[in-house]
Length: 501
Image (cartoon, rainbow, N blue to C red; front, side, top):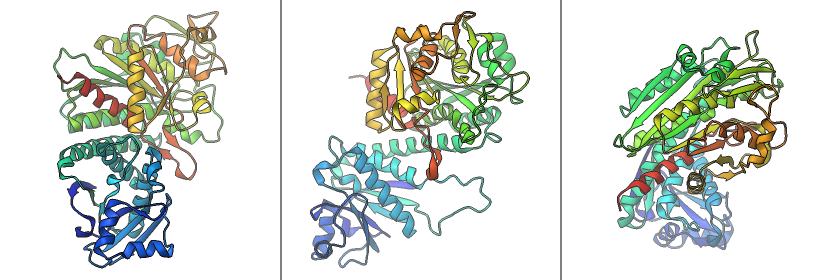
């Protein structure tokens, strides 16, 4: 889909459909006022009759309004004008996009970016409008023999703004929104693929393809023999039960001087997790194809950074494996030695994500990164703690935590900090090894983060547990692409902080 920015009054736009907002209490948005004035009160008369009252979620499609050039005008309910916040704005955009999809227009002109959202400027509204529109129109039908292709799909989407002076900043925000949407779409596509297609080897191939598309990304794939030489006994123990070899995928994005230390993104890439010997229940096990969504988000964030040509150095690392039951698989009670030299007693083979992440975090030290963020669908306990609205956030560096929380708030891809106190470390004690890989039911998301903290003492490190936010269940089942918006916003913020005054 092509997005453009244009200034001008709503009634003068020649398009298949113009989208304008209507607030409660019969209050017209500025764009709706222009149409109403040109048509001599056409919209006002409809409001008096009660055809639409402006509540969020309402729409009304009008045809051939007098003295306007658009074929249709879509009125969208926007609620009370002074109570319009982030969530309502995104719901308004989603509602409008679904209505446009239903009427099968190929081009549309939206003035929703002109709505006043509490505490948000035009750039934020433009970017979120682009991202939410793309998210609403996303469909994963690559594997269907008969695709549900609309008769006429929305191909051109123009965002109307009133102030010509703001066109440059609005255009930059639109470009950022498109790049983030592209990154989200890549993460969704990878996440939605089934485990028989999206294997560790397939992920490695997609990394190579990304490197060919963007010359700023150099890709290296470590094979099992390479990891064995490095002493990655923890990571390799997970893949022993699979016929698919593990891969450690390394993507180096370089667009800053060599003296600038890189930011490292480490994403869990479990392409399917049956739990190993500690096998999961059969119900909903199909969802475990999403256990690589942390790795998928690294792909997505790197793609967005490369498309925006961010002046940064970034290392993307994705340890990829399957976790299946087999005669060679990890057994409860087994002890493995990690690359760091620390030994781990495996009490539960279904706590495998931390086993592949810990060796990768040790490996990342060689790049001397300024910050390390790992992203993983790590624990069901995080879903219990936070539900599906916020990702769990842990870390050992307060400035990094602060930056990630703020990035999540701006991107509306929110995270919530949970404690990482030493008190929880006792739950990982083992009689036979340096640590156990699980710490019991109490504080499961926290003890998982405590496990990773033992491998990040030399790093400025943060951990995002996205088990509750990486995918949707029910009738809307599918990958969300989170936290690509949060990660990309963090990278954008780092560009701003490093820019000369």
